[in-house]
Image (tube, rainbow, N blue to C red):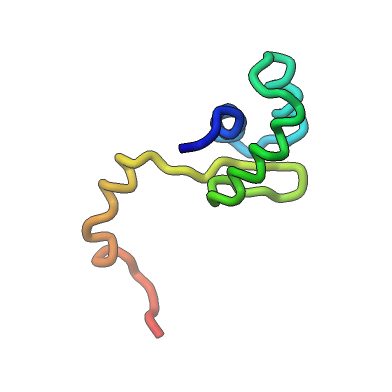
Length: 84
């Protein structure tokens, strides 16, 4: 389970790549995230591999469980690739 600050920050970064600093400022302005919570929340998301970061941009990587479960069975029969 994610902490409340990590959850709120993730939801801000989930739809499209966003400037991290801008997202944190927006959440702080709403009272949804304290500035000192931002770094630990980013660390938590990164440690759990839920966030792609490139420079000042970040993007949430989680996929809904229903989508994952729907593709879990039989995906290897549909995957075209080269096995070495």
